Amino acid sequence: MRNHPGHSLETESDLPNPSLVSVEIRSAQLADVPALLRLINGYASQSLMLPRTELELCESLRDFLVATESGELVGCGALHFYTQHMAELRSLAVSPTKTRSGLGQMVARELLDAARRYGVDLVFVFTYVPGFFEKLGFQPVDRGALPLKTWKDCLRCPMFHACDEIALAYMVSPGAEIYMGALPPEEAPAEGTPVLPILGAPRILEKG
Ligand SMILES: CC(C)(COP(=O)(O)OP(=O)(O)OC[C@H]1O[C@@H](n2cnc3c(N)ncnc32)[C@H](O)[C@@H]1OP(=O)(O)O)[C@@H](O)C(=O)NCCC(=O)NCCS
Image 1 (spheres, helix red, strand yellow):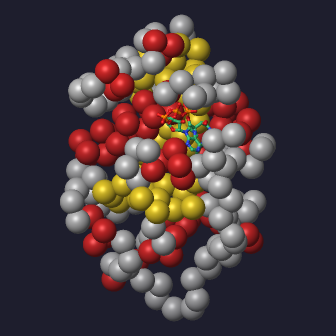
Image 2: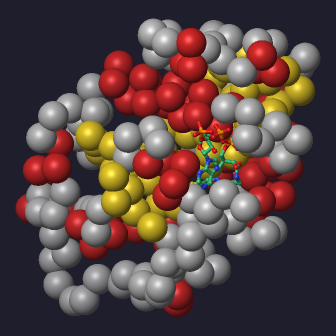
């Protein structure tokens, strides 16, 4: 699909890192599933990401972009729609051998471009690396301000009883903040108390 960040290059510092010139970013294919599982679940085993099963990955494969180099998968990320205004950027991962070379940012920018093309107003993320997302223009938001359905993955998360992820949002369209906070009527729980994760103190994995 592309071999450079999906935004216009305006300054010298915007130029891609030379180690990324042979990286290609494209839509994921079913043949990528084994490598995707290895990458994502490798980080999940360190409690850095949510684990994914083969079934879950296949169900949501069309959300995924992959980064490859010489045919090898070196990064991935997904854009998952929740409402006609909101999407989540998730499952962003870069192979441990390629981190800190700009690849994570390159994949994230492609996903934000896709969000823009689809007409998404706001992209949110739950993460332990807020610093990485702030560099892309995301801003911290109250986790409770996101619609209930965005917590659906939490039900099977090992951290359900002590959720320490940080929520950030990227406003694709100006004023998109209005889509947070208020539940549309059809999302309001009919009765009973909604089951929400128990929020713990945030864990931040900043640059080491
Ligand atoms: C988080 C992750 C995707 C970042 O990808 P990456 O390719 O290493 O990051 P990049 O090289 O594109 O970094 C872009 C910028 O963010 C900064 N950055 C990267 N990781 C950071 C972190 N943990 N904290 C703060 N800043 C960070 C970089 O220093 C760089 O800033 P600079 O342009 O000023 O030098 C990658 O480290 C990863 O796969 N981590 C494990 C899985 C994970 O935590 N995924 C996030 C799920 S929400």
